[in-house]
Amino acid sequence: MNDFFDRQGHSAATGLNVRRSPRIRTRHKAVMHFSDPLPAFPRPAMPVAIYTNDLSRTGFGCICREQLYPGERVHILLPNCWLEATIARGRRLGPECFEAGALLSAAHLLENPGFRLPPWAASRAV
Image 1 (tube, rainbow, N blue to C red):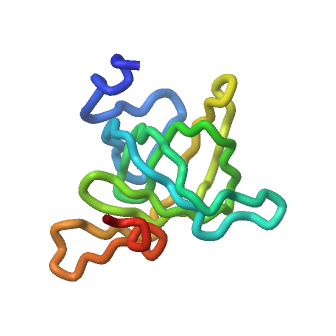
Image 2 (spheres, rainbow, N blue to C red):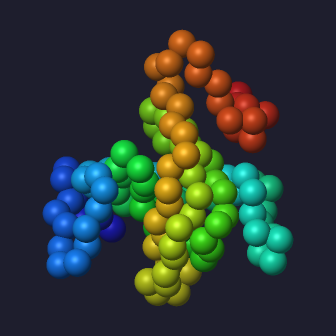
């Protein structure tokens, strides 16, 4: 697991993997909240822990203990911002280990003067 967090920086595209914007490996522990889960897959009200994998101008990748499904809308709380995103793909890597990719719809930086925590996090802030 330590090797996972050691990998930082630009991520090279391989083979037919053509992207609109370059990916940067950003390995962090983060918190994910399901803002709009799919009706067929009810989600817990409490946020879940994830590991971020990479980030670009238009999307991000993560590793999670739960299967994520295309179309689910999520909020991701990172050390310096929170993101609004829609899951675009998901795949199983192993037991209780899933990889997902999401399209970003908004990013909110912490140093922004008008920054507000997402509603689900504000009620738990101490």
